[in-house]
Length: 270
Image (cartoon, rainbow, N blue to C red; front, side, top):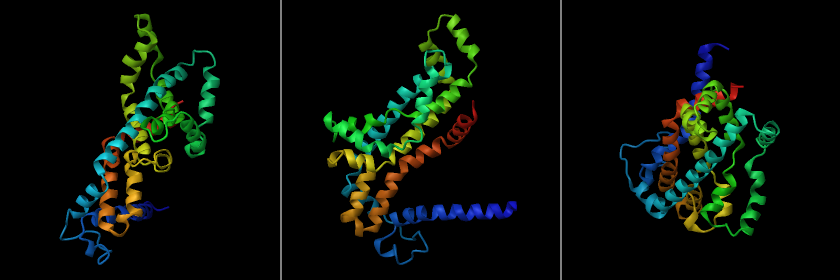
């Protein structure tokens, strides 16, 4: 395919992807009367913050933001707490059954989390953890993808450096946290943002586990707002969607380069 034609096609695809986001951004600051009066032009010469104020006040944005942050942060820290030591053990491959156990971990990669909704729900119900923040977080703190990704990076680190540290008296725990983790910090940060964004965007799981409005995340709250009083107020609804999107977009933009390089290196490192 001609290079110029490929660029044109990619540009059209990018515009098609950005068009709904442009409409959301413009409608969030448009007067209600202009939203559908000039749909081809997403922006206005008379911007207003009324939609943003309505979304913040009617949606209880501050509280839902806090719940979303605690939920996403809890899952992220939980997955890192398990993935980092597990990846270290599998990367060294010097403990009994490390190979078969890692194969079992890889075998769970194709299984979507949605398949485990019902079993996890029943276990949480029996443990009286429904409508609790731990109930939202605990079933997601183990990640085969995180273990696999970090193992690939840990294996690429010179083994001689770790052996020299052991000779100098460092324990395996010291070698992990004082040498291996700092050396692979970009990969860990990129994985953290990846987990955080994926958790932040979840809708079905928070909706299933938390029926108490005090535990609604922003994704659930915005959908409820759309189904209720916000459904006919497109400006406020677009403002609510915009506010819910800002944290993940900011996190992605902050680490987009290390994120891409980490995913590519983790895929090709043997």
